[in-house]
Image 1: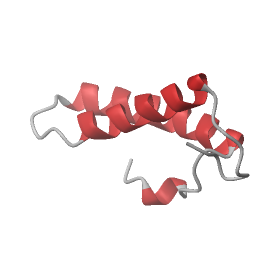
Image 2 (image 1 turned 90 degrees about the vertical axis):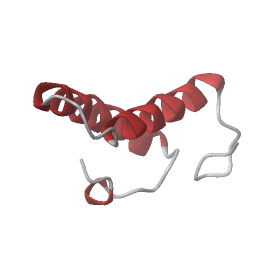
Image 3 (image 1 turned 90 degrees about the horizontal axis):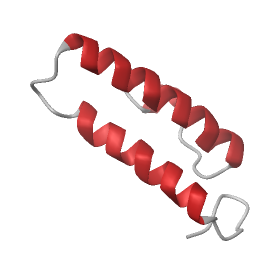
Length: 66
């Protein structure tokens, strides 16, 4: 798997993406308590900053529906 610059991602970078994708899946669950949703969004936003800084994906924050 390559980043936006065409470099091979490290195992840590891949794990960051998996963690973010997992948070997105959790946020899609319909029966989450509001406090859980708020905390998952906070965690996803923090991971998104790292993902953008590392150039792993080019998603705009407003496209994430957080």
